[in-house]
Length: 90
Image (cartoon, rainbow, N blue to C red; front, side, top):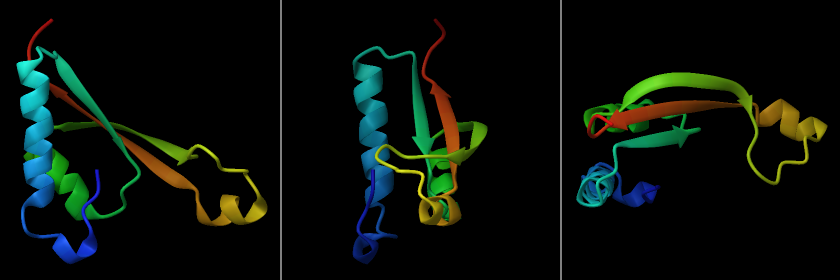
């Protein structure tokens, strides 16, 4: 999920997140797992405001299609954050 920088701060991301939660609850999901490489603190605060709990970080994560060239290794060593939201007990 991403919101164009010209439209951030208007509640769009929170509305999208709530729509995902609504879909999951209506379809009887027991939990939602979120993974992100977002570096902006605001993104992490958004996930937490929606009820997600931070459950871990994977250092040096790579994204699909990376070739692991020297430049990619220098500039794209990513932290992958995992969040989870329990909707109901299983």
